Image (cartoon, rainbow, N blue to C red; front, side, top):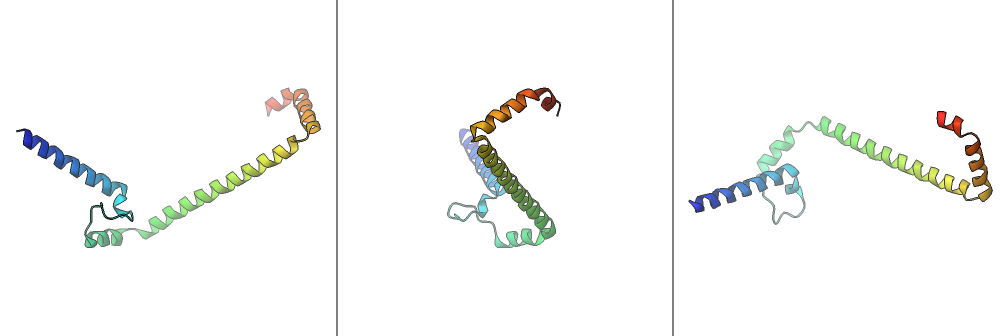
Length: 110
């Protein structure tokens, strides 16, 4: 009875591992020595069934988001550098502190 339990458990673990491997796409990695091999016909069938327009749209969206993020990061870096250079001079810092303290109520309303 124990052998069947161990055998069935090993089969389940192996099955889960293969399903996880396929779902995560790791079987497409360059290190094929320890990967489960799918038949070429199956891979070809999957490739031919793909909606390439949807893939292009998804890639385009991802590239646009990455570019937008890089632009925002670059702008933030530039603004940070500008603020540091403005605040590097003690007189300016003091003038800004005076202005903020004097107009704090108005600034908070913004």
